[in-house]
Image 1: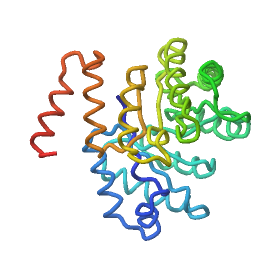
Image 2: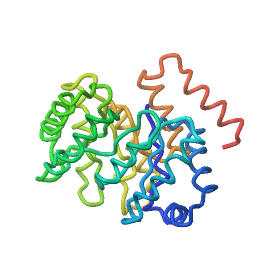
Image 3: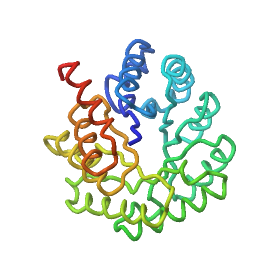
Image 4: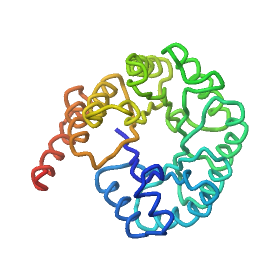
Length: 266
């Protein structure tokens, strides 16, 4: 499972304040803890700062890369901010994210061609998010075709069928899980990803819903998750699900996690 640590998002008040105040200690602590918890990428989102987003990214990206040994997931709806972030990132980042919307394609496909990041592609276009597994597959196929034409390899494409809050519509989690199955069956080599915490937005006991949803998504072939890697119960559920589903054949990851958990007293 590829984990993208979600904690450096400016929608969180503490992170926004750290960006505004150039609080290096806070940002580095959050980044290092996510790396130590097993993240493959650290997501950085400074979009709430609006006209200060670009200058914040220019400061924060080199700061983080000097201190952690994993790449960043560059998370912004602003294509100008994305271009600046791609310019300064050392190594190969994850671009978060492309959609099937015409304007988004026009501004991001040239950046993908030039900088060759790995790419999260959302099943979303001008008609909105996919409302069925069939439509999610159609959107995914179109996006994969466009990306491969620009030189992206299937294994560098992360398709996100879009996790949406079940508090809005109780069937949305099922649509997502069915979409995972179709995409995994029809697009071999392409990875699937979920923005996990969206499923529980607005509901009580969010962590319970998030970790249960993760187990169901793993069962349906999920490859990557944007989530809080410091959530010990979520990490435990992930390791147990992988062990039970045969995705940890030697049980090495499960047993190591249990040993480390016992040492830390969590």
